[in-house]
Image (tube, rainbow, N blue to C red; front, side, top):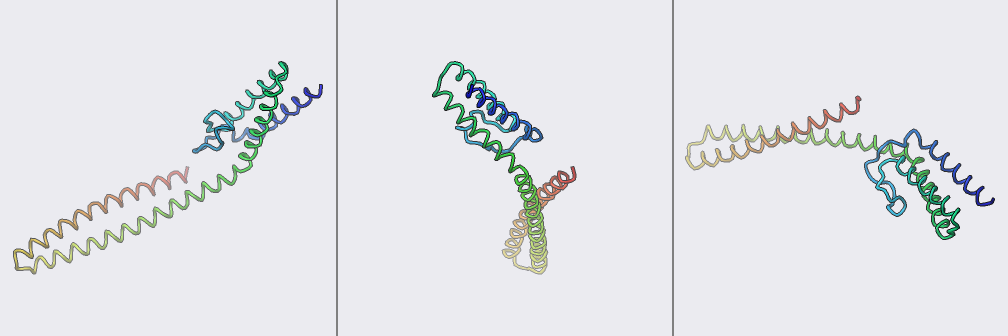
Length: 182
């Protein structure tokens, strides 16, 4: 009789946990949240973890019926540890969301800093190319002209790569801004 009360109490805890995590149960996390010793499945959703707890609970009921005391002890400890882990995880959801939003803002700020930096590179490269072209117009030596033409070609190549990087950064900023609008 005492065992049945304990099983009922544990089942009530599992049901209460299911209700508590219901709003976030099917939200996927990017990284695994739990040790593989705690949950055998590589769960990316709390609903999958809850399913595993319910499976262990069914195994526990069967172990109680068949009087396997070692298995009862093991499964009880495992279920309690799993319930504790999911409870802690659900309690940190708001912090994780805030952290994610803060991380997004930092990425956007970093992109804007890179954009400004590359725009400065572009401006300096254009100035260097213009400077070399002016020197080329005034140069009379064939060797010096060739050297300046090589420098202009190298700077032009760097300018092309710089503009490609600028384009990638602008597209990334556009993607982040579109995500934040949605």
